[in-house]
Length: 104
Image 1: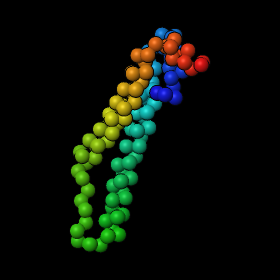
Image 2 (image 1 turned 120 degrees about the vertical axis):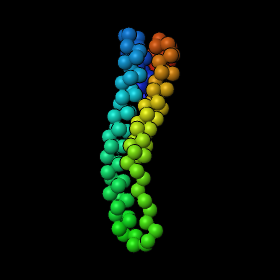
Image 3 (image 1 turned 180 degrees about the vertical axis):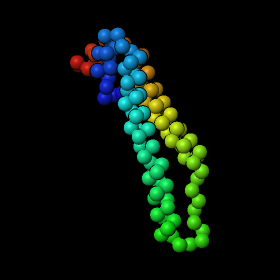
Image 4 (image 1 turned 135 degrees about the vertical axis):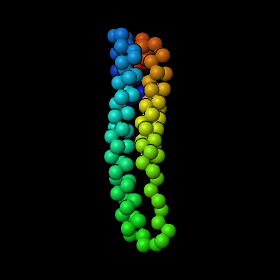
């Protein structure tokens, strides 16, 4: 939000308060979702390789799929919340004050 203060204040001044915070949240949630979706098969493959290398009888067990999917969904929700909170907080500041501070 700090990097986008000027552009979001300008968009708010032109009448788009909700769209700015939604777009900022979406721009962070989509890469988090892609990372989580790619991370599950990657982690399962890495887990299998490590268990194959480790020939002990005390191999670790892979968590159930529902737990992996819950972690993926939780990650996306947390990233969305952690992005939306500062965006909404920044949207509460008057656009004119933010633009004036940027010029000084």
